Image (cartoon, helix red, strand yellow):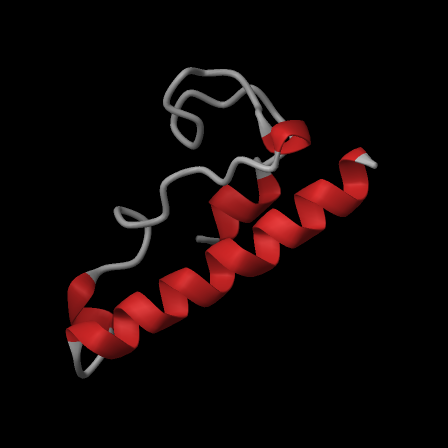
Length: 66
């Protein structure tokens, strides 16, 4: 997850599926594969954390692009 955050503004094919950054469109790279399922006590908690991170990154991207 840290590597993904550090690579958000780079054309990194590991983070961005199309190998092109799209943060300026408000797009967020897929986070599902970045945090192991066993890192959380429940799937619901993991989904909530991923949704919160995704939402925060999205808002930040929109602000940076504007």
